[in-house]
Length: 227
Image 1 (cartoon, rainbow, N blue to C red):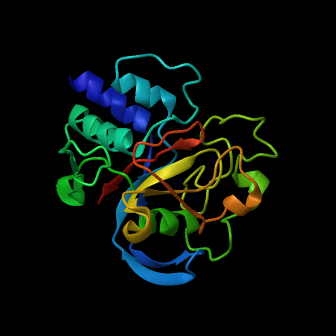
Image 2 (cartoon, rainbow, N blue to C red; image 1 turned 60 degrees about the horizontal axis):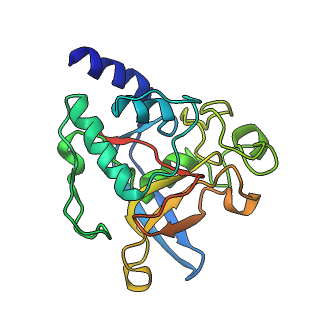
Image 3 (spheres, rainbow, N blue to C red; image 1 turned 120 degrees about the vertical axis):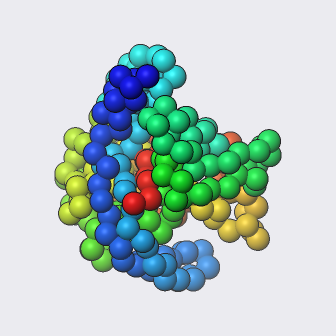
């Protein structure tokens, strides 16, 4: 059991310490902006890979360093709980039977793995910068013009100033938050842009949403922990 936990922890990779701060979020549809204070937390240096995803399930992945995709929000939170348990941490999520995920609750202080909040994600993505991106698009991101039509191995583009790879491009990443329950019901946020997107989607502020059961070949997730 200890050997398995150690092996899984190694596959998680570096968890980067993100300092406290704040971020201004913006919804382009409503043109609303709001400030969110962010407490210190830990964020994985790159998205969950196929290797880690399959190792937790007892399988062996092809293209092991490619981000796992076709994972719904509900599957992502279940994965976080399973990985927490397998590595000796208390799970953050409590799940019920609602197919819309409305009954999922999160205790971020439990100590286990979780999805970042939308504010945590954008704050970490920006890493102190204020522009559309944290660096040159081709140098930092896999996107439609350079990906070759598929997701690419993680950490093969330049990181941001805090050592985080693939925050822009490669795969979109699920966040914890409900997008706008008054308009979109249970839809959850995802961020970052993917391997088939044009530059407009490859921005630190770009917000997308879908149903918690939705999955597609350019949407994955990244692990966070409260710290």
